[in-house]
Every structure is written in C-alpha cells, then in structure tokens.
Image (cartoon, rainbow, N blue to C red; front, side):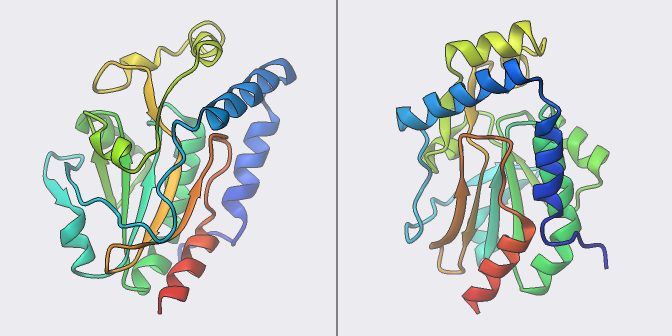
Length: 217
C-alpha cells in the first residue's frame, strides 16, 4: 500500500527546515512568534461547528463540504500555495496516506488562496487524487479563523531574500495567507481534532490524522 511511515512527514519537514540558514531561520522564528502573539489566526477550536462552504476544484467544479459530510467525516487542510515547499511535502504525504483515510470512510479536502489554475498545477505535479480547492476571496480561510496578513519583516524576507512576491500567487492579489492548519471534522460537522501553528515548518502528521479518525469510530 502507498503509505508513509507514521513520522515520515515530520522527519521530512525537519530536514528541510534544518537547511534554512541561521540568520533567516531567526527572522522566521521571530515572524512566527509575532503572528502567534497577534491572535489573528487562532483557528477554530475542537468542539466548534465547521462552517459549510462550496468552492471550485482544480477543474472549476464546485465541491461542497455538506456533500462530503453526507458521506462521512472530512479531513480539511489549509495550505499556503504551490510555491511553498513545506506545503508540497505535506500534500504528497496526504496523498500517500489517502488510502488509510478513505478506508475509514473519510474524505480529504485541501484549500489554498490560489486560483483554480494553480490548484490544477499542484494537483498534476504531485499526482493528487483528493479535492484541491481554491478559496480565491479567502472567505472560507477567514471563517475557519486561519487568515493573517504577512507581517512587515516576513514580507521583506520573501521579497528580498526568497525573491518571492506572494501577492502574485494569491488570487486576490493580497499579502493575506492561511496559517497551515488541519481539521478533522466528524459527520455531524463538529471539529474533533486540529493542528494550527504559525510555524509553517510543522504540520499534522498523517499518523495523527488517522488516529483522530479512528477515535471517531
């Protein structure tokens, strides 16, 4: 079966983060702390009702949370975009864990603020077979309380060190992004597990997702 060892994603993320030069890593850590301290994107809490939505997939077809919940639990992942190497590692790990997720009757949905054509690009490049949706206006990202505006020093880092104008990637042309976040939602629409962190080098490991789904049954 095409599955990753339980901590493979965590290991990959740590190894990639370890390659970041120390001065850059220090600026990133300060930005993560600033975002967390601002309280701008705490994410919905366990026990809260997951807001319903309908968004276009990579081919422009509308996908609704209600329709997926009618069939079973949902794993909902917010990622920053195809330009983010940490997000790409996560998306590939989710694809590898997809058989374990679907075996438990759950659906997997990933959402970014990029346009559907960018979603199509990442879907094709990574061979993704789950829903990859575009939240062009970031209304769903905001509803799940994971939206924040990139702080000044992090913006400078992206523009002048990484050479990456994030506003060119966002469908709305803004410097707003989602905190990378994963929510496990039961069939009643209640959030039962979550991972929300301003530190985008950390993600919810597929093993944790599977364990959360097992607890639902």
